Figure 1 (cartoon, rainbow, N blue to C red):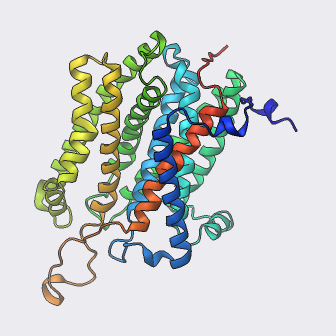
Figure 2 (cartoon, rainbow, N blue to C red; figure 1 turned 60 degrees about the vertical axis):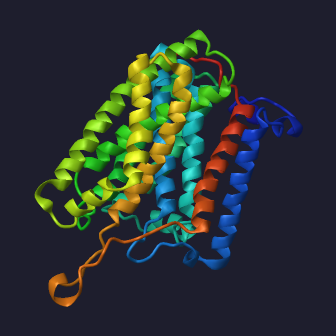
Figure 3 (cartoon, rainbow, N blue to C red; figure 1 turned 45 degrees about the vertical axis):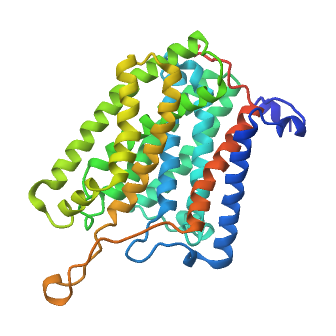
Length: 393
């Protein structure tokens, strides 16, 4: 079977494939990937006891990094769909690169979650044999599996420049991805006993922040590809339009966050208002989520009217740091208030907030997966022509 007929790729020697354009970035990627596999070995040898999660704080850094990666994947899928699904000519250059990015980020997310789940192989078997149709987590996992399949098929058709089929599978993949991502938000929204999370906020919030993340990553991908060079006119026009969209999305996100905090604090409801007060008193929200994730990129867009595309590259890197804190805080803040089984005034003292800090192994796997993602993306850029622009017939 001739693989090149299925998906066109560049034929190159192993030496060419393993010769990076940027040695510093290659070193960072290799070191992080090595840390990922060291962390995996630690888990296989010592088991989940090596993590710092507890029965009071069962979700840790690996859940946050899983969310980080799948949010990135959905965002890049949305970005890629502008060109090949909705046929906006100005966004067409991003389609191949964005869809490749969506594939490698979802694979990196799966790599992380595989070592957070106790028995990943058993999970895949019983996911089919005994489906939990009333479980948001079951739907999330199942839909993400389908989403990855459609993304791969769409990418194959994009590389073959078969835009008719790419549009069909791209649209299906986009709809399935949005459904999976809103289900991921529902995992938090359905937590009736966690008042700070319960409600309709997260299913929509996840879609909004996914789109924002996808645009940040688009700037980073093109900033890296054209490092030290000016953007070509068509790429610059595309990035200017993305920056303007990003400004609107960040403004909406700030509006969303403000009302989430206000409605959470209002009424002084125990388990909600006190958690909101704790969140707003911490640096990770103000310096991480707000300053890095929203304010700094928004100011760059606002004062340049979206035209400072070169400046948007470091602003997007700062934005991605903020996105990480959004994911980490989301997981941790949900579990701040410990679950209570008794009347606290009668049987036990009112407990404090649950403390958590990731173990070395959690950090090796979680952050090491960024290296795995970089390696996969690098191999994709080497093997496939991502610069040609396809248009629908």
